[in-house]
Length: 435
Image (cartoon, rainbow, N blue to C red):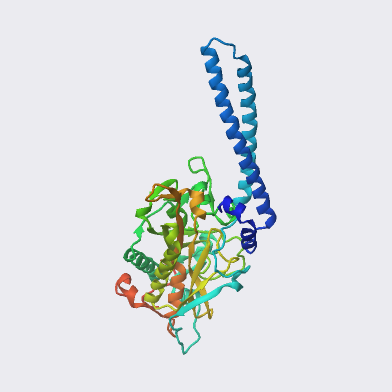
């Protein structure tokens, strides 16, 4: 959630910034009006409470002196009713303000591209050479089905569309990829966690998924008589781990990582990437989260994005980095880099990691604070990024390392994680059906 004081003090700039993020000026003005009324009422309440305290002291003095205090007692009752009425008004204004502001995205950082969608994104750099084939490269799902290592048919039969079984060396490749990624995160100084995969609504609110994106998540009812959500990303439990707490500034940054399944309903994506590993309802991802001081968060973003790129470089996969426009960024981000990997069969780059600085937006929601050397308490900054999306990495390996006979070479760095296997082919892949 953005700072209401910033909205009040710099309304025009904030409103203009958020216009390309789908937030109307009218909604912001309403929220600001509610905030202004509420702050005035809170000031009035403080005066009334002080007055009530004064009257209460007068009553005590008069009673100790044996004097009549009926008038003061009645004044106390009247003040109590007035305070109660104004407290109700404050709660109503607070709720109305929250209803708007909980759906307002973060403010885009200075210097990022301004635009309404991905067309305004800007490329930063490209790394790695595209593979050269003397045959028409196949899509990863075609290769996987022919080798029998990706079984979409049985996935759809058992769970529905956008689900699959990894079979034989397909499953082993997936496992090799995420184990390699976790090893890289360890070497980069991240502390590994295994997190809850079900979280409460407060956690989803803390990272910005709720209340605006409830339709994108899977809800599970009757968990200890309450509703919970399957995590869309380990960003949710990792970031909220630091919530409702005050941390020593000297201990920052915190760097944590987790492998988790991610569950997404993909609402609004009907007809897009209906085949393959690019857009699934359930997939693995290695997530990176950092908790930073405000002064260092943009440096932390550069370092974290470099961590994601380094994995692709070691895998020998061509990639590029782009900076997202205001209209294409995620809800909680103030600046986002997407790292995109080359997919030969699509003849294009596709997102494989999204690394974001969320500034103090999530920290304000989740109450992630720090105490500086002078004892002052303020909000920390939060960052998150994919390190990487595992299924998309598997897809990229299959397409970039394919051979004319449909076999797939294993990147050198993964061979130890594959038990020495250097190629997946029809002889060793195990076949499509498990008997």
